[in-house]
Amino acid sequence: MKKTIVMAVAALFAMTACNKQAPKMDEKAETTQPVSELKIAFVEVDSIMSQYDFCKEYTQILQKKGQNIQNTINQKGQNLQAAANKFQQDLQNNKYTQQQAEAVNAGLQKQQADLQALQQRLGNEFQAETDKFNEALRDSIQHFLAQYNKDKNYSLILSKAGDNILFADKAYDITNEVIAGLNKAYKKNTAKKEEKKAEDAKK
Image (cartoon, rainbow, N blue to C red; front, side, top):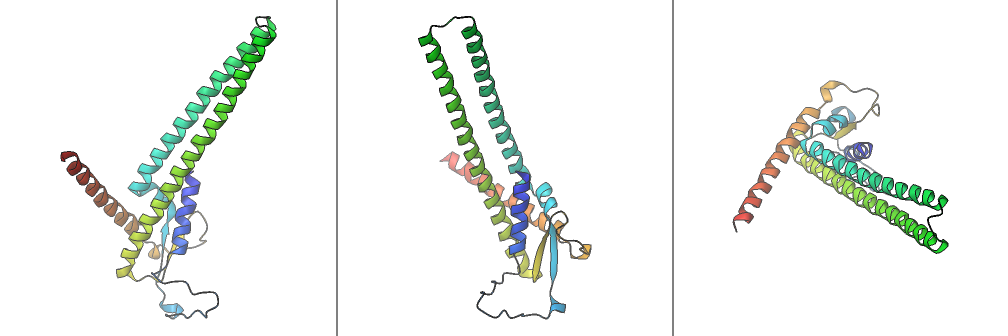
C-alpha cells in the first residue's frame, strides 16, 4: 500500500510544472525561456510520506484498517477450519447419518463462500479508501504547489523517489519548504474543520 501511495505522489510531481499547460501533440511546442534560464527544483517523495502530517495520519488509519480486516478474515477462517476438522473427525467416528453429513457439509461450504464474499467486499472497501486517500493527497499537494509556485516561479518541479533521479544538487532541493507549507496548510484546514464541528454541535 505504501508503495502505491509513493507512486501516486511521484506521478503528481512528474505531471506538475509551473502552472503551464502541456502543448498538444499536433502543435509545435514553444520554449518560453532559454534552457539556461529554467528554474528547476525537486522534492524527496519519501520525505513527503514520512513528514507530511496528513500523509502520516492517514497512513496509520489505513494500516489499522488493513490489520483489522486481516484479523477478521483470519479469525473467521480459523473458526471455519476448526468446524471442518470437527466435521471430518465426527464423520470418521460415524456420528452422522448420510443426510446429516450432507447437511453439515453444505453448511460448511456456505460458510466458506460467505467468507470469500466477505474478504472480497472488505478488500474492495479498503482499496476504495486507499484510492480516496491518494486522490486527497494529490489534490492537497497540487493545490499547495500552485500557490507556492506563484512566488517561486519554477519552470519544473521534479519528484525524487529512490534512484529515479541519478544525481541532484541539494541546492535545488525544496523538500523542507514544501513539507513545512503542506503541514501549515493542513493544520489550518484541520483547525477550521474543528471550529465548524464545534459550531454545528452548538446548534
